[in-house]
Length: 438
Image 1 (spheres, one colour):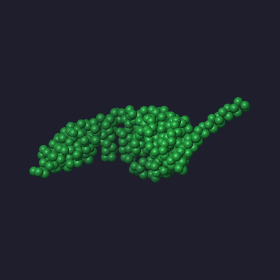
Image 2 (cartoon, helix red, strand yellow):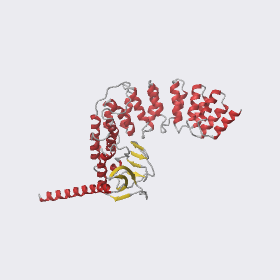
Image 3 (spheres, helix red, strand yellow):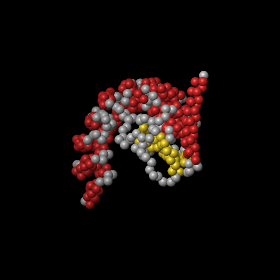
Image 4 (cartoon, one colour):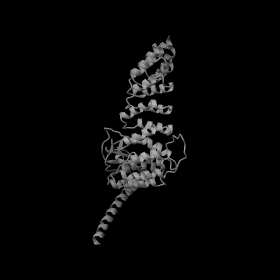
């Protein structure tokens, strides 16, 4: 018994020390004069930054005002380093946060209080505790970021508590759920599934494109997305189940995130949905979009979409495939131009194929110019001029100048001149001046 009492005393003593350290951070901030309080602590594994605006962690990426979850990214200037947080303080209360990873503090201006390096777990507890105070503030800036970047094993339970707290704003609850997926392993899957299933049923609609889940304003939708972030693809089976049998909003969301996962099981499910005529065109076109707009889509999937193009009758599905082939990794520039030339296709499909071919940076401008020169149909010739006008390279401008000066069709010369006038190019100004002076 005495051994157990001694162990309990040690544990209670450690807890007391930890609580005191956490309180110490809060007390130091509260005692600081108005101005900026700086604090630094160890970051969790996988966190990196450039010491300024860029921060990365797993599938989450932040730079400037841009915030992104999901996919994959790389940046040479994003390097491991400690977390640095600058807290704006007024009257002993924090009003704003600015978080950095790596780098070092600048000299700065105004009143600065530097708390130095603090234990990472204590910093996490302090910043999670700060959420209720700042949640909903008009100048809230990535409130959860300093907490989740800390090297703290208790982040997921704390995030779960925030996500379940109805007193918190929708934004905080959604962000908490996203971070559960980003930081969690297979053990968080039941929690995320629970958030999806707790959302109330939505009215059945045959062709519903609304992305937000019902009831709690997208909390369930955030949980569906978070399943795609979980380590080792542990959330994919749950996503597949929601894609097949979930509520309509959950199916739409799951279909999108399956395509972002890069998982062969996910691609197979998307094929099934795309080829099932009993599914709505809305869901099938979303599956096509997902299959052609992910970060890890292999060439075989683009080939699959090209292969089924002739087998789908819906214009919505055809349009989705054409748009998907605009992806730079699709290798489909020549295929799109073939569709644009194909007289068996509708004029609208041919126009869209030409447009998406032009949107691909990998499509040579020479091929677009050749399309214009070899096409006799006025509607496509005019559209080709517009497509060329959307490109900024020298070859496109040269072709438009040629058309404006030398084309035998007066109407096409006028169209080329119109689009050239939108560009800031001295040759265009001279061409217009020469035309006026005639």
